[in-house]
Amino acid sequence: MRIGEVATATGVTTKTLRYYEDIGLLPPPARQANGYRNYSPDTRTRVEFITRGRKAGLSLANLRVLLDLRDTGQAPCSHLSDILDDQLTALDAQIAALTELRATVAHAHQIATTGHPQDCDPNQICSYL
Image (tube, rainbow, N blue to C red; front, side, top):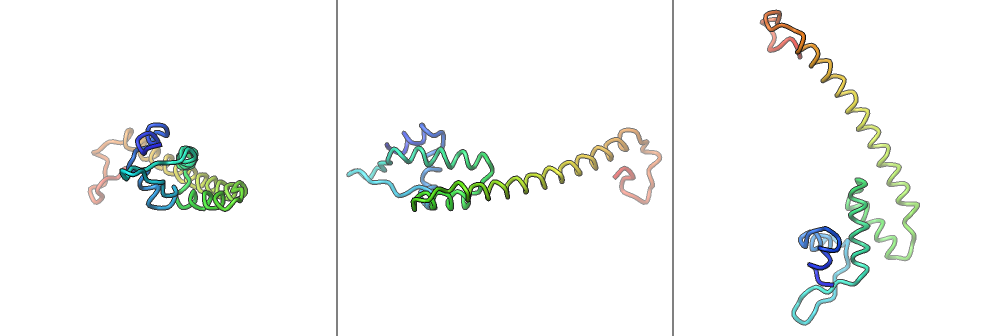
């Protein structure tokens, strides 16, 4: 498959495919006599795996580790489980922080919408915040 065909089939850009190749997520493809890249059929599977991983919030470094394990004949499933466990922990922390931030903003908004500017302390920039 040529680069445009892989890009169309996987929904990524040709620039992304070249980048993945440059950083080692995709093995260098064979070259045709005219210099065009000739990707193997399993390139599509790798790119789709990378895309699913990115949608799950995995870093390219995490994905490289998983692909390297697979390339050496090991199943990366238990390693993926560890990565996803870390991802869930990080997401839970982000959700907690965002929940706290939302409560802070909602409280400030409630004060700002019910307060009166003439009641503001002239020594403060804004008494609502």
